[in-house]
Length: 225
Image (tube, rainbow, N blue to C red; front, side):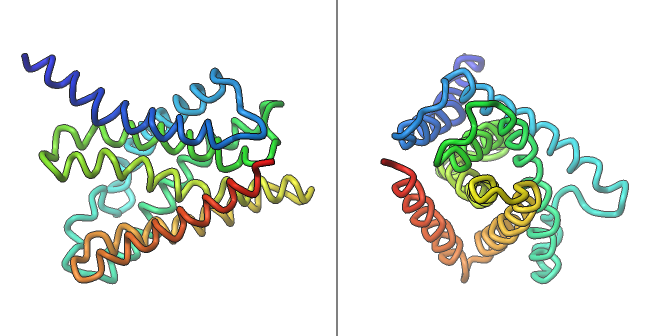
């Protein structure tokens, strides 16, 4: 019974939201849909990147940085810096590395591929991350996290995915553009985390996601024929 409950939770709270958003990203690519095997590979790389990110968090105390920022909640300035410079930079960098690997495939380079592969990698990342929350959260908080996390991770990843693609199309150096996009995404990611845990300001975290989501939809439509 316990095993069956865990399996149901895994399917409904981990796989189902991820599959839905992968499906959404895949069918948003109207001009050129990437092979499903590459899509699955990008998702898997994102999953592995999240595992590596967890290991990086656990190593932070060795350099005097806490692995968990919860004790900083009573110090807003310190928590904001941690959210941007540690959580934002570390997680967005971790997601961007497998994305950079995916750009080496010859299928990469069509309009919209930057958002697509960045999103799929981010969805794999969020899926691994959500596994940990299955054992620590319950009820509405768990369901909300399972649904929202894939969306927020993919939206933040879209920032550097688009930056890389635009530089590639403009025939400028894409890697510096990717780095700038990662830093911008880290700022948005960190601001979201900070605002989301500050009750009087939590509505602003939803505004950030909504604004980025509308921006992403506009880019996707322009990439379509």
